[in-house]
Amino acid sequence: MLYFLLRLFSSLPLVMLQGIGAAIGLLTYFSSSRYRKRLNENHRNAASIAGFKPAPWKVAAESGMMFADTLWIWRHPKSSIDKVTVANLEQIIGLAKNGKGLIILASHLGGFEIVPRFFAAHIKATVMYRPARKPWVNELMLKSRQHSQIDFVEANLGGVRKMKRALKNGEVIGILADQVPSKGDGVWAKFFNQYAYTTTLPIKLTHKNEVATMFVSAERLSFGRGWEIKHHLMSGGYPECSVMAATLMNQFFEASILSKPNQYMWSYNRYKKPSGSEPVPAG
Image (spheres, rainbow, N blue to C red):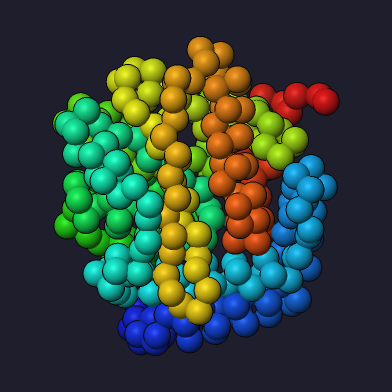
């Protein structure tokens, strides 16, 4: 029933769905003190470091639009691709189809759900995801994300093996690399001048397979016009030191977020300490 209702809801025009999403985002912000506190703290800390003007209510509205974007992309897989604009498209397609493999790294910015579908329009993609805590949410997510050219794999040992296999086959792999990993799978690295437990998987995959890494974001355009995909090809590779490498990766994400800071998911608990992980460094 819920799946049917969400599909019905997502059948609305994108601009209308985003408007409803913005209203839901604002309602959540003003009704949940816990949600509001985390969003305000993360957003204002980044604003003080990076120098942009804090606008938490706009962030709340954009977060609701992010949910709306996701539903619309799931419901309209082909039409959503038509709403994507991207510069240097030939460069992206060439890298994706050169047979050497390509690592795509994204963050929770704008319409991030469109990124794997965009690449899947040109080549098979393997995308890592973290299962939802509630089984019914996870089932709904997997059912909605089904795509003939995308293999969604869990963030576990089996998923890592599939990612390695995909790279050896010269395919594209995708990771939301601003998610907090489990203990032992990351290091403490600065993110907007605060220590955040940061995944080292993309770094290890790059070192082992010697493949190119591209940072990709999908900025939301106004009035339901879709999304602008921006990309930055990493040159020179990562440093050998895992902390330095993770810090460099976070800096790439910071740069993309600062382009549209209100579109980032500041309510995400990015600075949490995973159970059993080493203590947060001092300073």
